[in-house]
Length: 314
Ligand code: RIB
Image (cartoon, rainbow, N blue to C red; front, top):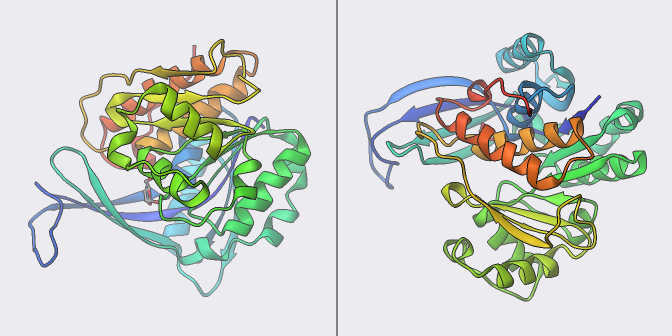
């Protein structure tokens, strides 16, 4: 197994309109529904980027669960789901504007019922993994357990600390070899975990020296990859540079004709882990360059999981 993803599955309900709705506004838009959830999107991306992938999640006993199983089967994703009899599959209400920007409301549903005890039986799966990838749409104790099991098993660990308002602890961050916040998530982590402050809008334009220093304070034992949308990403390493020559650097974004940015970060994370797992001896910068290319293609299509392209690293 190349990649194990532990995380959320949501049934996404998406409305596309000219603008995002202001409080009290009623807009006319176009509706579609489809599979999503940060965990599932990342797992499908890893799969479609050529990695043998397993996804561990919790689902209700309903149509959402059947959609997850159906797509996993088509994509060759190994789906291991705890089935909740009384709680519906997770859901998300998503508004997308003309520029492809989104606002999202989550109903956790069964995602909130995935416990550390459910993971405990998956020891063999973790021992087979090259890279274990988690996000924060799942209970923090379960995310913690997944990273701890991955560390014990000798797998590389990646934490995508999304969404920005999710709880996290210093112990949790310390279990990740690489954390991958976007600028909003990075600003939230800095405010929560350090005595420093940086507004989300100032992250992309901050100097490399300032960003590197903030990253080192936030995550002294590991690497930080800050995704910056059309400004690319910033990379900061600690002692382990994972094959890179520089302690910190920027990579440009790939040009894209943006239709929908929902799941862009998920595309990046899934593709990055897939590339790292398949080619563990290559420099991290190479995997991140591939991930940017992969995410750009995902933004050119509507939807979340279904927008992930079939594109493997060369
Ligand atoms: O990252 C995008 C995802 O966030 C959507 O698919 C939605 O389900 C929410 O989890």
